[in-house]
Image (tube, rainbow, N blue to C red; front, top):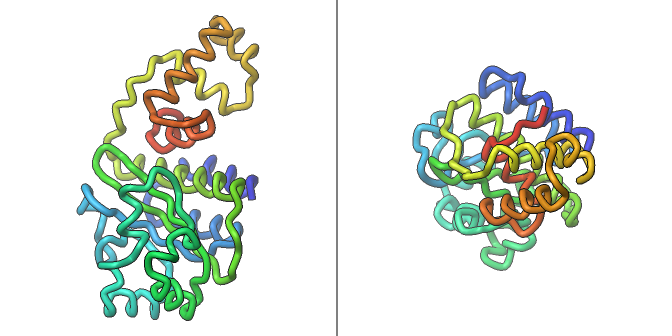
Length: 234
């Protein structure tokens, strides 16, 4: 799984239009075992919605399910649409099931049996990416974290293509460099040598990043740094 995600994130920057980006994303998601996806703009960016009924920006769900979804008014009670704007992290369909079990039972009859919703936020609005599978697979913590990175890689490339404004993160240049080098796998000692910082200085930069990006740990810092375009994975 990790290799497919890494390859996607590295190559997504080569795409020059949204069609190519989402084709690449769909191919990678299928390789990961999640052949279905839906990317939606929940609020703040109405210009994103061109090809599909709101809030869908891009999706490849079965056409029969999409028609059924809107004809039955599921877009008004979909737990993903209602919860994602307020979620601090990803939520699996199993975690959302108790809100509307009949909704998820109905989706399963159309081949959508398990999935995860990943909220994506930028200065101009709130978005959500769902990836789904046709089997009843549990999504364990390691897989969840990797799917979050996958989603943020897509979102960073999408923002670049649409030339959307980046968030004002308030991080110092040193802190951005520390994040970038730490993501690249350098040790604290190596970062100190590269940037001419003390060990305490490196630790302060990561602590400051966690505070300003509102993250509980350094792994979340990496995800938000990619999402907000603070660092690029290349």
